[in-house]
Amino acid sequence: MVVEDVSKSFGDFKVLNEVSLGIKKGEFFSLLGPSGCGKTTLLRIIAGFESPDYGLVTFDGVDVLPLPPNRRQANTVFQNYALFPHLTVSENVAFPLRIKRHPKAEIAPKVNEYLKLVQLEGHAHKKPNQLSGGQKQRVAIARALINEPRVLLLDEPLSALDAKLRQHMLIELDQIHDKIGITFIYVTHDQQEALSVSDRIAVMNQGNVLQVGTPHEIYESPATDFVARFIGEINLFEATVARVDKLDQPLLPAITPSDTTEYMAELDIPELGRIKVTTVDEVEPGQKVVFTIRPEKIVISKEKPVTKRADINFFQGTVDEPIYSGFQTKFYIKIAQAAPDKNTDQKVLIRVIKQHANYSDEGPDIVWKDEVYLSWSANDGYIVGVKE
Image 1 (cartoon, rainbow, N blue to C red):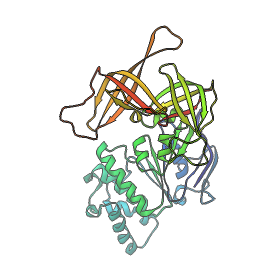
Image 2: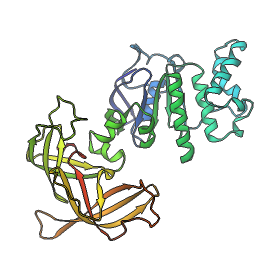
Image 3: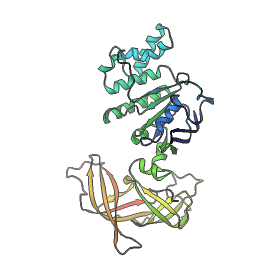
Image 4: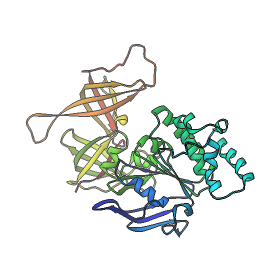
């Protein structure tokens, strides 16, 4: 499927701004972004419920924009289920086939097949009001799939469910995708949902696609500061490039392509001082850039780290706020660094996440007001872009 230069406005408000995407056959592709970014409008254009002001949407090279929704071989699952309350589960699932006047002898076995796919074969004679939210959503998925579409469109399908059920349904949805192998296009504002199940993700904001990539690429190598802030937690600083050296050997040869040139950059950050970061992008002294470091990449300890590695960044600070979450603790660390152009110290809070891998019956070893040391490798930081 190809979406090419699709734009859409409602009055003076431009919802989509020349959006272009290529979605592979059989891919689980997510449209991710905050409310109002245009992702649902794009999905509705693909489905045929909205028409773009201009642009092109093709399935296997065929322009589908002139076709009504029922002729596009794309079915939609909505967040509000849209089930018929007076019909049973099996009647709801069978409805698309009855509309197309399939023989009755063919409908029953096919309905049973798709109820089994969504694990509802024991609920065929129930009405929707007798089902849980997760079961209703599975009925909606079975009804959408029984037409055997080439593309399944899912518009925030799990948003009405509670957190635990949402996680369970997400796993089931991924398993269904693996079994039937058709293209899924999944709209969500929940980054964890998108990261968990997607083959690739398009991050959207204000009608624009900011980055398309695998979950690993989106998380580890965000293209813009918005993507960095929106996906997971991040420490983000504006910086100035002070020095750049070409590395003869990459610091992480196992994951750095052999034909890629890697650089060691030193950045001046007003809140921190000077730090080191590796990059494959060419930057020059004096450039304004944006530097990021994920909280889980930072090592926190009460003892000063001992290492001879030149690529490690060190800072000392005080625990301003520890937040214990069972499997991890999030620390807000107050760092005091002398600002280069001021006579007073400038304090900054850095977020650090420490996973709890081992059992401890004496409680956390780092607590409020403790003096701690932070460290991270130059490879763990990332330059997300150049400031204009």
